[in-house]
Length: 89
Image (cartoon, rainbow, N blue to C red; front, side, top):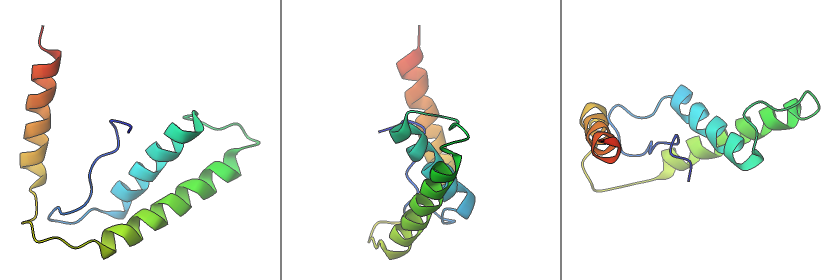
């Protein structure tokens, strides 16, 4: 999976529409192999992003968990620590 796509479920506050759309955009870019589609493919690309974002939003709305919500700042700090360990020289 693309490293730029982040988990959006079980955070407080919940994922915003912008975060869902950004993840959808990354997904469509990854599977299409293109970060910027040609003019001939722009409409299909945009429609795919809209559809993936809508499906993702529905999924996030329907998921349930008993786990306590995660804190974005704590998770970001963990990710930075993992990156520092991975890229340490």
